[in-house]
Image (cartoon, rainbow, N blue to C red; front, side, top):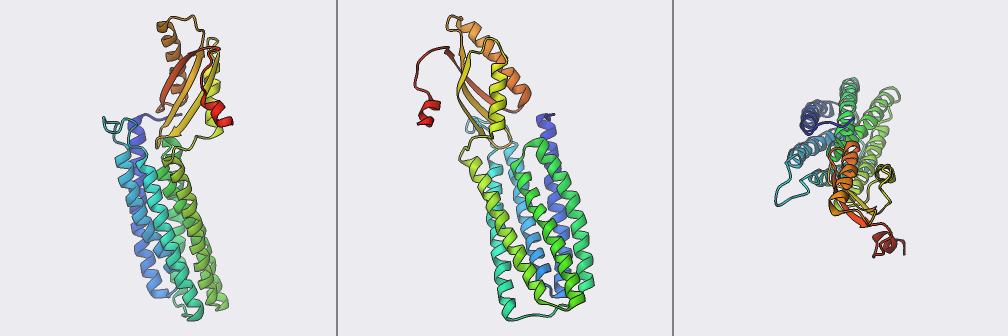
Length: 304
């Protein structure tokens, strides 16, 4: 079920404010814990939370900007601002990962003992539970609104769940086995995980910004809708792209060549209405072709 544009904006706004609020709260807690325990793993999580504040703030700005209605200067709308946001997040996450990795390598040569491990475990447990609740809500919003910025934010917090669990296990092992090097090893693992996540976010953002085709399932659905009508004789040169929360469809619809222009227009409107039922926020451009008409086709050019 698709949401109205007003409900869409409202959900995204709530999700972004919740993300910023949580990241600020967790940062303050982890700062306190990192100071008292001396744990590099908690410090890595603290840096990740600082990155969360930055990333969530960027998301908040991007969602607000991308929700602006189309204008004369931006007739496709401002949706791709979310992809730019995701790209900035990826760069910041990668920078955080490199910093933690560097500090971890340094500590392998200059180990530092940990203290107040129990306090660190309590803080990380609270962080874990709060993050899981936020992710659940973000994934719900991302699914309903098709927001790449909120999905990017959710994916980053999903990494936090894994890192929080690994840090809790690390703190327990350090407390029981007195092996401080495990803390450094976990921090390096978190750093590498951050770098991997940053790459995935950047890859998807770049795909949207460079107008990559939508998934095969979406293209198939559009073709099925078009061919449901008995008057549809064919469809070719289908092009799709993500405008940032809304899809763009362009294609040639093959109709009986003897139809008057007004009749062809009315039939095309029926096709467009059905596509809008499946993809309510989509922008659609349909060019009518008489069936059997020979012309230069994009499908043939791409098949060469």
